[in-house]
Structure formats: structure tokens, C-alpha cells
Image (tube, rainbow, N blue to C red; front, side):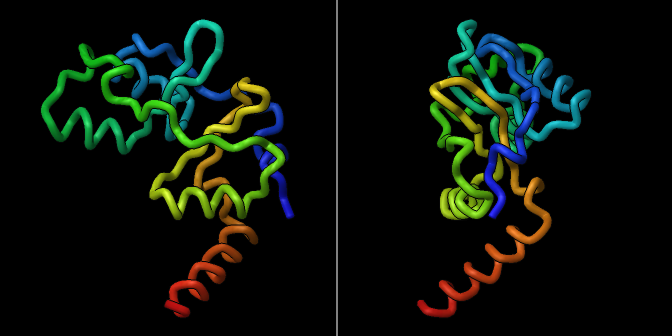
Length: 139
């Protein structure tokens, strides 16, 4: 079973401070081809996550100005996180159960990276689908 550490090994996650604007975040996400930004304080402490879905639902759909809106105002604060010793299946379960697509990985409070549903296109994803179908059929 693949551990999350294997997925984020040597990853350089996209991070921005809470004072960065949504426009800056979206440009950085485009440039890095990333689906999320980890929002961190100057000391590297994770305070939130901002995703493409947040940009659509919390900014564009309500007519907010992306150039004036700070990440602090539209991010998901204190997101659920995992440590790298968890498995890919653990991450998929958490994402499915909580209804989100990205999970930041922390080790001793330090940001290591972020995993998303798209990182699990192989064995783990199909295994989770089978497991979920079993549970849903038992209800």
C-alpha cells in the first residue's frame, strides 16, 4: 500500500500568505498547474487552504473583486490535514467523507505538501471506489 510520503516526496507545495489576493493565488495556481494554495504564516504554519472551487464559489459567484479579496477572507481555515505515514486509501476516505478534494500533509507541524484526488488515479482510487460501493450497498 502506497504511503502519502511517496506521493509528496520532494514536493514544493504552492504557499502564499493570508494577505495575498485571490488574483495572485489564481495566477500562481495557473502558473504551477496546481489546484490549491496552502495558506501559511511567515513561520510556515498552515492556517488555511484555497482551491479553485473556493475561487468560483466564494469569489466569482458572489461578484467579489479577485484583485482586492484576500485569501484570509475566502480560504478554508484550519483544514483537515494528514501526516505522511497515512496511506493513499486513508486520504481518499477522508476526502470522500468530508467532501473535499485536497489534503495538506504535515509532519511535526511543517508543511510537506498536498495531495488531491487526482493523485490517486491508479490502484488506490479503484480500490476506494469498490470499498465505497460495498458500504453504500450495505445501507
